[in-house]
Image 1 (spheres, rainbow, N blue to C red):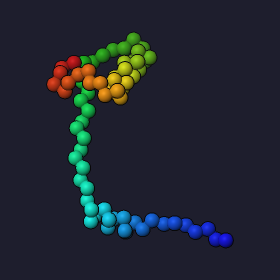
Image 2: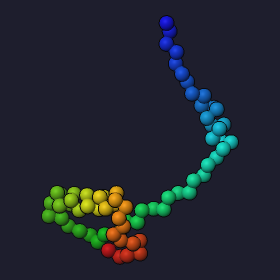
Image 3: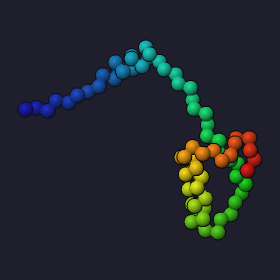
Image 4: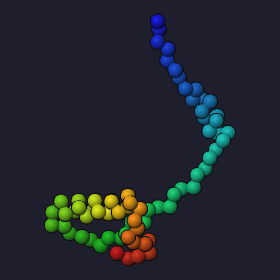
Length: 70
């Protein structure tokens, strides 16, 4: 029994997308604080600092405002 391959009709997809365009607004950019130059005693210390910021960002906690100067 020969195997059949299922192919998408790419022209139909393009026609569908062209006929029904959905332009979504871009999400607001994430406001990262402006960091002063910092020196870390070790690579591990720098990674801990970055991981704290990433965790706070993932939780949706905004510790700063875009207009704040850090």
